[in-house]
Image (cartoon, rainbow, N blue to C red; front, side, top):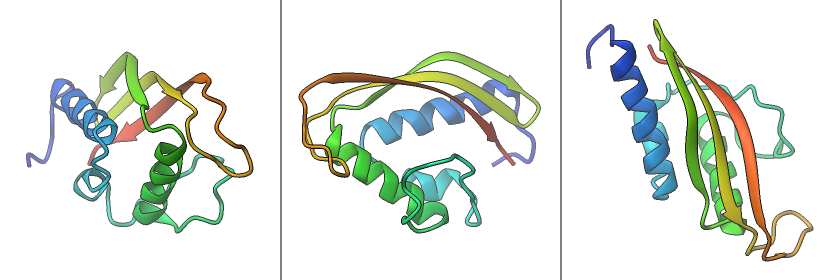
Length: 118
């Protein structure tokens, strides 16, 4: 991999990451995230393992309740080694999550994620 990527190359990395996650390929995190990755997102999933294993556990839990999850990129901005993604995810609640049984309802979650590629 080059030591310095262009903003367009950085955007392509994030697009590929999201596409692979939507396909259920959670091993992609090992390819794209640093071994000492720390998630700074406040989460009700505190009991999960830290780092890469924790993020994979979180996605497995969410995808078991929302198996048709699709991420849609609304904005993708890159400068230097950072990429900012404004996105939304759509899914149907078909499996139990925490104490909540399946509802069959469609849900949409919006978020902004800042990635640093180094």
